[in-house]
Amino acid sequence: MTTAHVGHLLDWLRDAYAMEQQAEVMLKDLVERLEHYPQLRAHMEDHLEDTRKQQVLLKGCIERLGSSPSMLKDLMGRVMAFGQSVSGMAVSDEVVKGAMSTYVFTHMEIASYTILIAAARAIGDNETQRVCESILQQEIAMAEWLRGHLPEVTQAFLARSATPGMNAKR
Ligand code: MG
Image 1 (cartoon, rainbow, N blue to C red):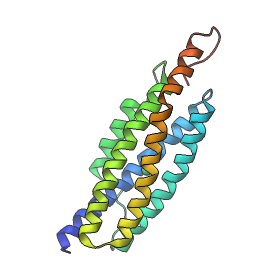
Image 2: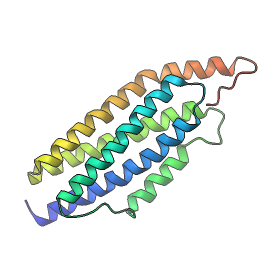
Image 3: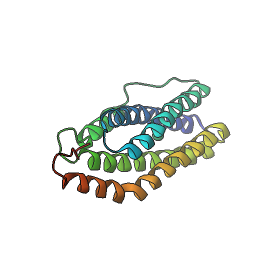
């Protein structure tokens, strides 16, 4: 274990913390806006709860390594730009775009935790490795649930769109 390795692990943990903050903003927004898709909304709500717990776990890892979460990481700006570009507020198929962007975002999270697990293992930080493995399982479960339900969401959206007087957007 070298100081440089710890530095990289800390950087990536702070990136992940910023990413989970952005995930919270995106999910909270979707949960508040979705009106006609209760199953999707309920699942987003569960993942929002997980996301808040993930932030606490990451903060614990960062603090055990003797640092604190940075709120001003460059990644935060990039992640926010990503979130805004796909948040779909102004589009008529908001529910479809929201589900799609959540699916894409979840895959960025899967990549991040896979990297963190490898870095924690390289350093011998067993607790960080364990925490990131448990979070990774939640992200994989979310991605799989979304992939399985994207067709259903699409069909529900199309059915509502084709029905006069029904709001399909969200
Ligand atoms: Mg997450």
